[in-house]
Image (cartoon, helix red, strand yellow):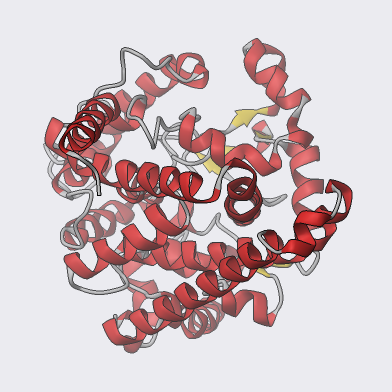
Length: 446
């Protein structure tokens, strides 16, 4: 048991950490791509208000940022306001694509039923999967046989378990992803608890900061300037990139295992998720930052506690190696479902929620990988169109219904699906050839 002086030092440390997390803008550099894109984004923001006022049936005083601001970063409520705004703005589609309300009628009504017991069953199964695989890995790492082997024999001995544990983490990450969208339960408390355990604890990803940036990604998917989680560069303008980004492009093939770590810590392109700075935290209240800081502290405490318990070497082998496998899965899936040879990007003059959603890609990784990943890959188009409405266990049937509805309405050309059984080779190939580039011909400007 800690004595009084030890408890005081611990409390002081927690207070200091919280203050650093909540107000770290003075200590952290602005991500370089924010400087590079600042002028373009400023023009985009100004043009967005003008476009919405001119083309939407929504009053000019109401903009998407206004609606988003009403949505608490840990709330399941408020999605109806967002959906209503999107439906009104999609009057601009002019038959190029069906409206969101028409697409909704293509899907079976039960696709929108969120069942808490079913969600918690999947959460429990994945939690057991993670616990069993990590426990087994740790038992091997701490065994006399493992300790007696030289390093070059230890590595192949644990590699299969590390890959398995990392995949288990990825499956759990997908459950936390549902919690972030409010599709685990209608209860905000249950969603928050599941999200904190799945993301902040198991996947060492601060849940609320991730939830915040991810929501903005969904509300701006495939927008050239305003999309989150993705940075888009025009291939024809690559010579004008800042040196830091040129260096990133030159070394791209060495970065795949660590890109998620860079995203969380360095804040490229959205802003910091462990300590708070960058565009995702601009104009946010101290109250919202404090709410998000709890997630960061949970992740820091979990990692620190396991490190202290296991020691540096065992922590690296048992926790960080599987975490890197999980992060590889996360980046691979995210990248491939938002990149395709015929994918399009939109500007403020051309973007609509529905058309941006149809630029996401459903990819088939194989029956069991799809199922264990909770249809994150093969149900992604439906997910983007109804991100706060359809739980993961309804995505498969909803996707079949979507394809049928689009076929019957003569709009099946809008839907993208790519069989990707060799997914690891595909991400290496695509990232090497394209990095974050998009061709100018793929940008719809008018």
